[in-house]
Image 1 (cartoon, one colour):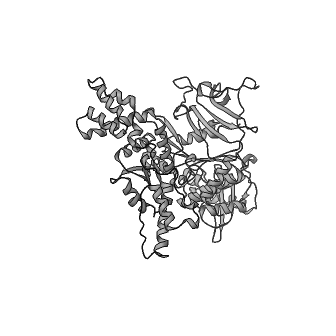
Image 2 (image 1 turned 120 degrees about the vertical axis):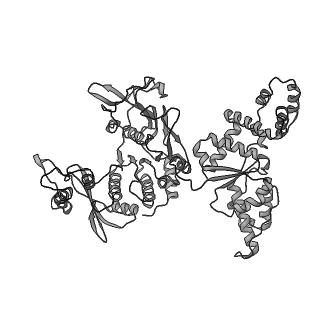
Image 3 (image 1 turned 30 degrees about the vertical axis):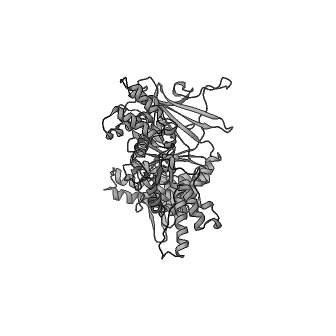
Length: 599
């Protein structure tokens, strides 16, 4: 089994774009549900979705809701009230616990379905579909439709919680004490009862009957060749064969497995818990019909990072093959690493309300922040002046803690010419750079950067490349390769120039105005902060007559403050109102930051 992450992600993007995912839950929204922020919403824009966040932040609760969404399913299987933990039927605003989701039917119509917790006599935890909740933003059903509510989605559901997926042996050994007079201790009990299990594994007995002819086990399953290959791939070990059986030989229902490798044959009593959990996962998914909804709660439990990575590849491959929708919760950086932002949903607490919010489209590096992991690679943005730095930092701050934790803006004195002649030549030698350059808008000399991959061999000469670089940067830049480079001076210089153009094309951006002062300038705000001073008209006339935005700020500063240092205070005032306003320039810089984050 040879799988590459980039190829799988590309295939899933194509499957998604071509609408090959049938009976697919497009979104789920929670008007009032458990401890989630009111009206929390999740869009499933990618068929592999990962919930990330600290313990107790609502990830499992959300999986339970998704489990209860299809026809015949209910969240009651996991969430119900008791005398110790009663559940309020209504919020303070008289809203029931409920959620609604959207899917497309076989005709392509977009249907919204709500499930709500209803008080019923004798069944206090009953969930049922209801009419659309207009107060929650659901669309009303058209008058010409002969129904009050939409039918729930019909979808096979698999839910596996890997914190509880223990083998029958582990369940008894770790959580039971012998209560049978025939056994002095748990070891003796397991040794005695395993004789029945061995008969089933050997095939000499198919079904063992207990008191009143009750079945003590289900039919033995021999793992298929495909399942053995998948288990071997994920665990990084060559298995020859395997068997699995559900039984209650050890008091409670559970499952046992027996493995065979080239070196040994052994059961779950000697296997690692990760091995047993993977067998359960593989058999469940392999037997699932196409277009199933597969929900996995912390599948990384007992798996080392290498196995976690291969598990991710396996799950993505299963979506490619069988068009499943797979949603999992995790604390594993390995499972979220290199996934597209559409796949990642971050859960965290809103400190003001105490409820848990869900952020969408966070990069995997930002998700590391919410897992309280050190970020292995911070993006670094180099700018040419202090005000540009302040503007970018303000936008990054507005994007939340995840962006702040992954992006650092640095100002280096010397201006754009030093950045172009010195910094870019160094940065362009690193193929895996996380450094980007954002220049002021007046440094944009051409509408589009040169893509060296589009050049012909005939164009890759020192003269032509030098001219392309000059027209793009506005200055002549000299390149001095190491004289010992293979291919000699000329070939080495051409390689440096091509690398420079490649870096410039991929990692150099511009602010959306000629000067950073122009970005944050606000005429009405400027006039308002002059107040009712006696010389306001005179100062304002001077400001209005000046076309240079940097000069406008200095005129305003001179009128308001005594010292030059106060210009930073004035910039901060304008930046704050600009961020609140969120004009086109603001959105342009947000897009710029997002392109860098997704690089």
